[in-house]
Image (cartoon, rainbow over all chains, first blue to last red; front, side):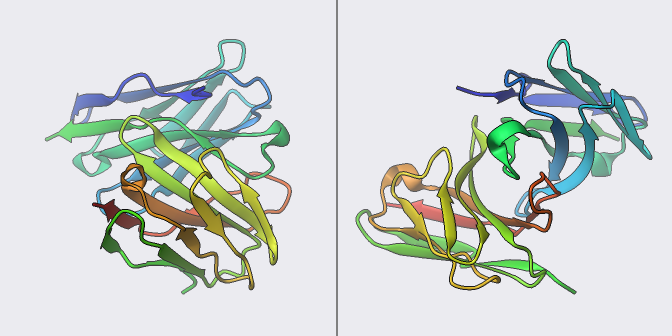
Length: 113
Length: 114
């Protein structure tokens, strides 16, 4: 039972364009969402988060949008840079999960120069 | 600088052997977690701890155990390694009690079970 899903295994984007990574969740108890970035042979690192009381959170080139009615969130990267090429994981927590994160499968983003 | 370290970074073992993966953090975080990363599954929670002598099972805990004798360490033990446990294992910690908090991950331990 995959409670957090990233249905696109990979995404390829040209440098300077927008990258949009999508994530869907099924558990209505989730109230906090995070995006992590992972380079090969390294651990995931925190990128940006959003609470369910908001529908948008921005941090520089990164913006996360949350649509609670659709149980959908997305990460926008504008403009995309080659250094953004990595695996991006969506994660969610809340309700009884008490500090634990449930992760999606990940999306491999490739930004071409 | 505070950090979280895992060892070994790479391990090859045989089916049936006992294996222990070490995790050490110097942030003095109460919360520690073990995840495994597999293609198509993302990161799945194995075990977690909210403090000394506290351990809890995650979604894929069968065949794994942990112990928490101090704040800094959460070793993960595979009692009898199986080929299905070939994976990359990540330890993580967080400081916020009763909330999600941001997880800080180690660099991972790649385990191959032959």
